[in-house]
Amino acid sequence: MPFGGHQQICLNKYVSRLPFIHLLPADIYSSLLHHFGESQARIDELLYIRKCRTSIELFEKLLCTSTIGFFTNNSGLSIRITNQKFHLKPRKLPRLIGSIPHLRKFFLYLMLLSDTIMRNRIHELDYLKCLFIILMIIFHLSHIGSKYPYAKSIVYTFHMPAFLLISGYLINVHKKPEIFLKAMAWIFIPYTIMEISYACMSMLFPVWDGIKEISASVLLGKVLLDPIGPYWYLHTFILCGTTYYFVHTYLSSTPFIRLLVTSSLLLLFSYIFHLLTFANAFYFMAGTAIHLGKRPFLSCFPASFLAIIPLVFLCSQPENLNRGTLGGILITGLVISLSLYIYKHLPHTVKQASLFIGKNTLPILLFSPVFTALSKLFLPFFFVRPDRDMLSLYRHSHHSVR
Image 1 (spheres, helix red, strand yellow):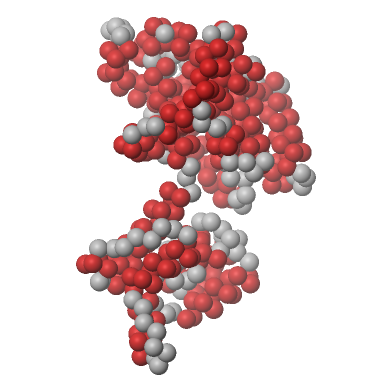
Image 2: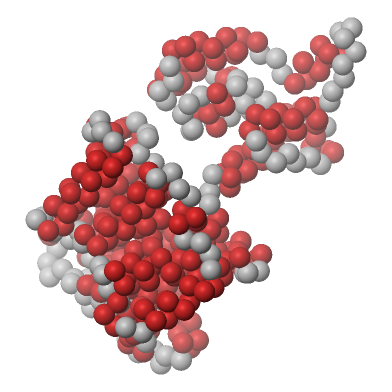
């Protein structure tokens, strides 16, 4: 069994899902558990379980040779283990695969892994991320923005604020520092590479707020202080997420005080050091506030078609088309509610496609300038006559995004 070592009793969510680690040598197994923060008592318990080394086949053989008169089979036992230990929907393997012990274990692990990943995701949030990333790419096209300036103003009011709201809700601040920083590094490294590449390309392409010269100080400034292009979102996320994590980890106080201290620091970063726009930080902190309040995200934005009525009214007033105003905040919330209503009525294939895109928004965001260029193929759908100059595809209002 991939989880025959009872790893599911581990407190760390990652090590509790690592298959076959109980088959490692005892010293390595113990060190691995210790590295993931398991207590010595739990490690001793898992090592004791490890000594048993009873597979399903051996257990079945012992039952069949005993006088108890109890009989089971691998398929039924595997289903009960899957259901009771992992609370996952049991599936029956094809007869051929189920008849081969080691192959059966491998496919059982794949099913557990797949179901665990999907169980821990909120499909509606993936759908929302898909919707907003597509809107980002579409309205980064200078032709779309020029043809539909009012629609662009509306979309820019809510699409990235909603992204930050979801990011703040989903960020996990209960990790050990080394694990959290490693996760942030997986975002910071590609962000740095793509931001430097984009900045260098701005020497050739007409990009808003592009650099005039290539030097280490200029490129470092763009990465750490003032990113250009679509990568400002990752810069904001890293800054907000890291600040919130360290306040949450090292400040012993109530959740409200931690939230207040984090917001104050981000306010300082915004108005004193000009590292980010506080309106963007507000949406991130609003997401963390929802999470701290232990409320499901979807309950804060109930799906409703009626949301379209106040949404149309608010969008008809130009003064509301600013994410930093009360009208902008309401527009963001109403768009989420209306979008969730639409999600319920989408065909299954469309839902599946949106979930796939929603789970891969990071690479899409990283390569969004490429997707923006490729989106020129779809310009006829928007009745836009594209400019002959391909370089104009990269021109979009950096200030309006931020």
